[in-house]
Image 1 (cartoon, rainbow, N blue to C red):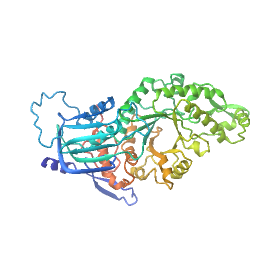
Image 2 (cartoon, rainbow, N blue to C red):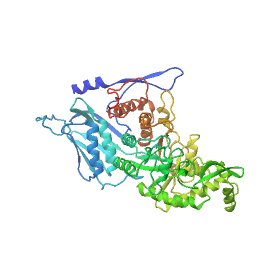
Image 3 (cartoon, helix red, strand yellow):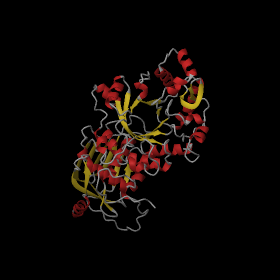
Length: 536
């Protein structure tokens, strides 16, 4: 106990953070927590009882169902918690374990492991650490993954081989089933290794969706089996592409972490890079009676466009195992369509008049029919609904416009659509000072609506758009600010006090530093017991 008291005395680190009142330069001094989990579990209690763990003897043990996902987690967390250790015990011929030592975490998964994570998977778990030992119970392997992460955050290092953990009882489950992070790999290409590091960081904050905004106007790094020229002509160059093997590698890495990969192929706008390889796919823009050399959105008047989309998305559907694809649909500029006489003639033929929203609706409905025919679900940006397009009721609508975003949530759910909120969580919009508190204040359920409407809000996403991030800074700019959103989407709605969360967030940031992530400071002046150093 004396050792533990000494440890607490040394490591209860004081740090300061700004509460955002820069006009008065007001700083509030806060004491960092130690051994507190992030996100905060639904029910969590800790006792003064301290149990020692010798890293050379401790192990994870499956007591019921097991599979590659669980075995991988055991191996991964052995290193995350304890670091690299000796392969044998020949240097420790006599390991005397005192009373109160913890040697195993029994992990009891009741159901057979799923192959891939999915929307609505059971991520609940119960964790008990006491005199009788440590036990983690979950219905599914996904709950086991979340529970093992929580266990890893409770364990504290005392010296090289000795660790401790307090007696703990946790009953936990996520508040929302969709908890995502968007990365944009079109504006700047991100290496596979960087994406993997981001996925690992996501798992340690209990995110479960990687929204991969893989292509856009600027580049097309996705290598299509059916249309290989789209990447060879549409990417920045031959180095900045994702091969089929690399995409499979990322999907597999995410699977092991319990993270869904939902790719986004945004159309009919944001598609300039598509047209570099596919003839007549994009609309020719006109000045007067002649084409002016510019191109607009995908041409919705040509059957060849839909033939291409059918073949292209059939390939995408085979590559990505998740039930959902993100089809975009935002920010469609109608000017080029308006300028094109062939589009005008098509509009007249379809009795659309001059209502280009009808034309967009026509395109979107054709695309949704194509995807639906592949037994795939789809997500779209809110613009499609805002413009009055009629879409299937099983569509998931993502709210991204930050003006009056709760009104958009209300209107979208009023129409009966499942909804995901992103509008208040733009990680790429940075400013000097403490910014995360604004993220923490946003709640997907804080709108005036019925219980049925709120049930349609299935979660949220935070986003890191790629205009000003690449391999050099994407991780540091994303973390730990993304973790703030993770807690809002996981923890109880009542867990919403930023001042109370600040000490735990600081600890979580330092924990990420210790685990090798270049997580930037978010609370102002202070320090971590172990500072980040660039690997050499």
